[in-house]
Image 1 (cartoon, rainbow, N blue to C red):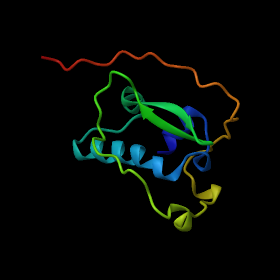
Image 2 (image 1 turned 120 degrees about the vertical axis):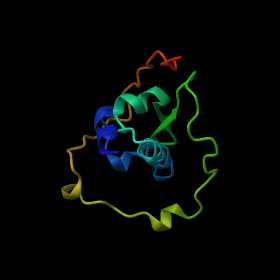
Image 3 (image 1 turned 180 degrees about the vertical axis):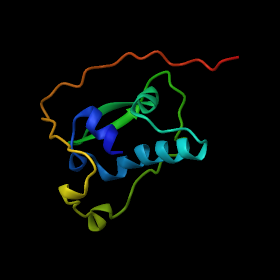
Image 4 (image 1 turned 120 degrees about the horizontal axis):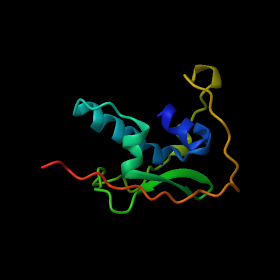
Length: 114
């Protein structure tokens, strides 16, 4: 997850905790199929969006959905929210200004080899 946040240039506290499910699900799915989860692979399926004052990841148009039944909500997540000390993060994360425009990326969707 840290490399994805680093690539997109925002700090973990700028991400809506319930939306972290997409990143974790991607990682678990890759590992289950003995595939190394990379930023490049993640970008095939998701794109950065702003959502209610947080950064999040939305499905990339044209890409096959890999999270078919996402949770509808996370009741009481704020009561379980906790802070992570910066020193325990494996990489340095930067704060992305909310006013920074998110450039729309047009990525070619890889085709399955026949």
